[in-house]
Image (cartoon, rainbow, N blue to C red; front, side, top):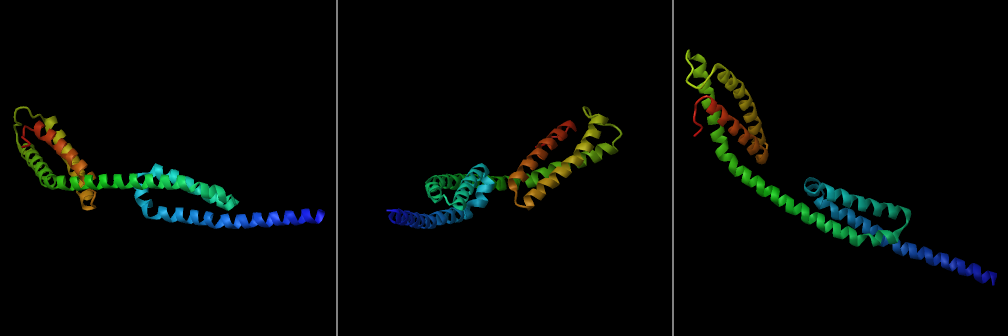
Amino acid sequence: MKKQAVWLLATLAALALVGCINEKAPAEQAVASAESALVPIRDAARKYAPDQLQALDAQLATMKDNLAKGDYKAVVAAVPSFNTALGALRETAQAKQQEAEAAAAKAKEAWGPLSTEVPRMVAAIQSRVDILSKSHHLPKGVTKDTLASAKSTLDSLKSAWSDAQNAATSGDFTNAVSKAQAVKDQAGGTMKSLGMTSS
């Protein structure tokens, strides 16, 4: 009876070991597949859906941890949840990437007119400031303080326009247009203060 019990325990241990081995391979495959599935979308996800990526990385870390501990059932059981989250991440990243690309294309289109209009405005202000600086009599509505302010603004306009051009040169038209529009608005105000028309 004792021999039979020992034999039974040995058999159970062997079966348990076989069970573990049988579960280990799918668990290892699950982790490997999860890692490789993330590779092609990681860069886009990092840029457009960082919070979702962080949550998915946490799920993957838990799967790896369970694999290391030998809890193969937990690894395999986590696969459906991981796959659902992966699909959602892929959709979000792709949608936001398409939105960003559409916005960039629109900005690139807007840059064209701004790239000629803004330098023309800045040059007109420069010319007006130069003329008024040499004049003994300032026109009605323009004071010495107004002229001094325009000179100061002119420097900041040139600097800001340089930043906008650099952004455009690097291909960041969204940022370039934003900066150029700010320069245009400020230039318009300066022209008005000097009695000029921005049209």
